[in-house]
Length: 335
Image (cartoon, rainbow, N blue to C red; front, side, top):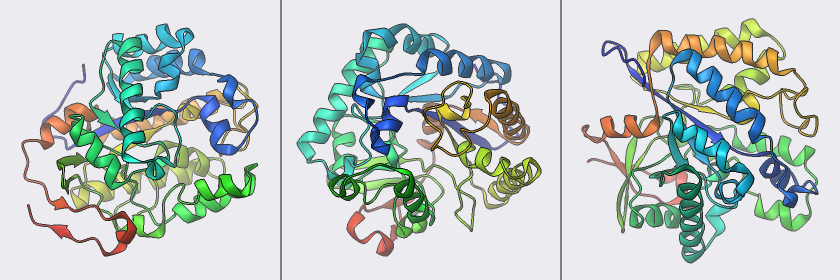
């Protein structure tokens, strides 16, 4: 259980448990459909580090992993350690926004069954793979009784990340078309940093965005910090301190995103060298992650996303109508 200091502002922490096969699938690598996995390495290692800081976080689990018998024990260990469990879709396809409403409902339902069977917990929080979201996704989440969505990533840098990805990936023209909105568009930078409620024809749903730096909207999640640290550890530390200070000054309660590769190095797995900072050993990464965690806990009370959502339920939040075809023209609606 997190030790909370009510004098500190709150922050939420989550991890998208993307497995090795899901990175290979998105990258267009052969062999992904054999579902190669690093979960037996990364889950115990991450749990151990989280215990060092007494952090309880939300783990967004992919249904396909939960459906495989060999992962049951390692995924159950997450729930047994007291962490929250979220839904990260079944197939982990970042083109979820292209699915029909029926396909979305099936995708979520299959993931829910598999995740609950493996962990003993039915998820009520969702993050789309690759931050993929649509009006249909939001309305299906509402219909299925979800507490919150966490699929928005307010940054202007999505097209740059996609360009880098396309340069390194092995994709056919059809696969590139499916991935044409991977990592979002420039319009994503116009989205709010602070939590709000989506107002849809099916009802309302709490949205907790992945936090980017206030004003500039540049990423501050740990994978990005580790990439910066390849060039200068000092600059990465200063960058994160500045981001946290700007969050405090703007009243933004940060929602910080983790990925499994933040805890894995090239010495653990050499097949993912296309991913930034995977040319560094695990010890190098873990030392930096500890520094970043220390910066967080010095300034904020760290909560899993569900607990943070419970606090937000008591607040008056702005509402926002989804219109993803014309995202740049969206206007907040007073709640």
